[in-house]
Image: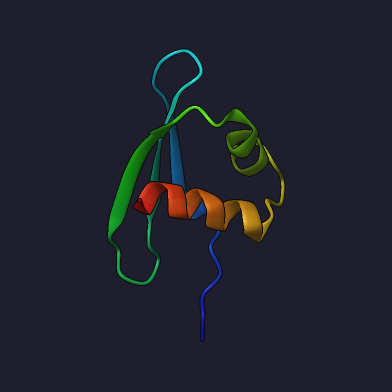
Length: 66
């Protein structure tokens, strides 16, 4: 069974003006991946949303893992 990604799997840390360090930690394996992004619409859709969409969470996860 596939587990759903939650907002709590991510941590957001402001880096510079308009940039965020985003860390994704897998709830299954415990491994973590980090990236720096300036995709503010995606950050706003995941970090600031009450219930972020799975599509946005998956996109952010792929960004962290690549």
